[in-house]
Length: 101
Image (cartoon, rainbow, N blue to C red; front, side):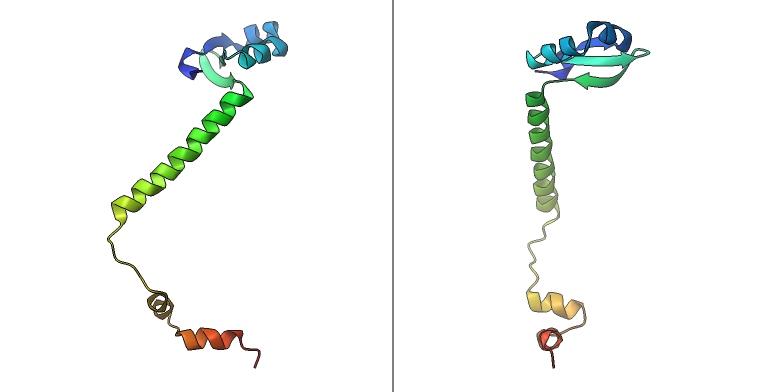
């Protein structure tokens, strides 16, 4: 189903058709875009289509993270000791924080 192929429908007309008809259409793969003053304000789609779109959204977020990492990766890796030192500590100092002495 493509939202580009969805039927545009004024809200008043959607009200006359009724929720049951809009839901049945969505279940059968026909999306409806609800308009107010010729502007799209809502869409009636099947739950299956909603899940598909949410999956695509998750995939795109993952892809964006991968691309951002690839674009900014210098190849330099930081050791744990370097990270600890950058915060002004040593491993021994951190280990002593755990001791209930």
